[in-house]
Amino acid sequence: MSKFVRKSTAALLLAVILLLSAMAAISVSAEEPVTEKPSEPEGFVFSLMKEAANDGPTTLSEDSVDGFSSGVIDPSVSSGIIEPPEEPIPNLTNVTAMQINDTQFELAFDSDIDGTMTFDFELMYYNEWGEYWLEYRSITLEVKEGPNAFAYDYYMEEMPVISIGYMTPDYYIERVPVELAEYTEAGFVYLSFYGEMYIVAYTGPANMVIPETLGGFPVTDLDAAIFVESYDEDGYATFREDIVSVSIPKSVVDIMDGTFAYIPSLTSITVAQENPNYSSIDGVLFSKDKTNLIACPSGKSGAYTIPDGVTSFNYGVGFWGCDSLTEITVPASIKLLEYGVFSECYGLKKITFLGDTRMDTLDEIFAEGTDVTIYGLEGSSAQRYASVRGHEFVVITAPVVSTPSSTPAATPGTTTPSTSKPAATTTTGKGNNPKTGEASPVLWFGVLFLAAGITSAAVLAGRGKKIEEK
Image 1 (cartoon, one colour):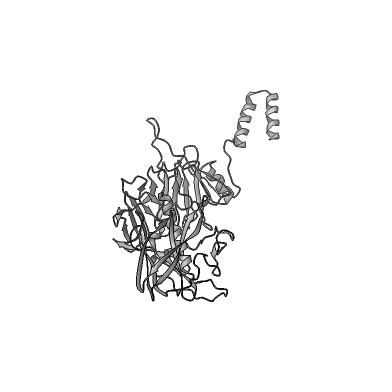
Image 2 (cartoon, helix red, strand yellow):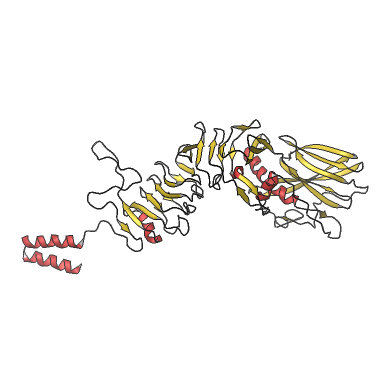
């Protein structure tokens, strides 16, 4: 089984378990009974399940699986696996399905009598389009009066078990989710599942140092759950607002987009030099080759100059939540800016383009309602964008590349005075878009006047006629 399938299955497993844990009972009688919703299990994992369940299963159709319609379990239809037995049904209490090691869970319960019980194991699988579906397997057990415990693998026929159903003495179907065990080490709360480890919370100090291993497992993946402080009853997350720095070890090879987007206090992200996939410059997260800006910390403030050589941003999240940035300088190495790249930079006042970075005038790249002054080259895409979108535009001179015979290069991010014209020309961006390459009419008139003094009257008349036609 591939690592991708296990990870995707684990994430969806959490969502489906929460959905099932909200069921009180499923009637198998002719009447439709009224049941009460069981209390939701407590703990961080179930909060995570609730968050994941917001999207819910939406791929099931009415004909796909009995008891499902539009991806929602129909409480009036049973799974069709468990049939009412002829002999007395043991009354089970304290029923749990809890992880006991990296690959197994334990089904445990108390029974009031000896007897035979059939349990309904609910399995989840993916189809060829990446959508998940449910199947059921029945297992019959001989139970004893008193405590009972049975161990099972998480995977049956390469499908994870997400819940277990059983019949009560009054012929209702109760269902319990398979719960994953939580472990805590060095302030990190994590899950361990089939040889891999998943961090789901952090309770340590404001300067977070992520270890290379937890519980003997390498820390390879990061996502936004690591910063979640709590979930509300609707499954919405509240993130910690005191984390100021994060140190990433060499073992982390996969960071989900948006991982650092919701921590307004975060000012620095650093990465171990030995990390094969990531690097950092001035507290900003980049790809290993430093061509892709992955995440600027939300708490970074003032002016920020994107390093030369960067060619792209992580779309939508590179500058997510960077409300405190007031100035950004974009190097010539960035050839294109896409829609909304600075849409979360509500404090941005000035942006400087050192090259002809393309922008679609139909796209709004800044936060709604912000008044950003654009600095850039005359005739550039930035100037056209400012004109169409109504931003003030200030012309700068292109930085000079140093050669043995040239003057010193201009400092990136600053305007360079020109010897033939002012270094900066301000336009409103509202129809005032100066054209380049056209000579002034006054200059043409002067040239023609001089020519008239040294040429024949016929030439003079011809030039005068040309002026009148213009």
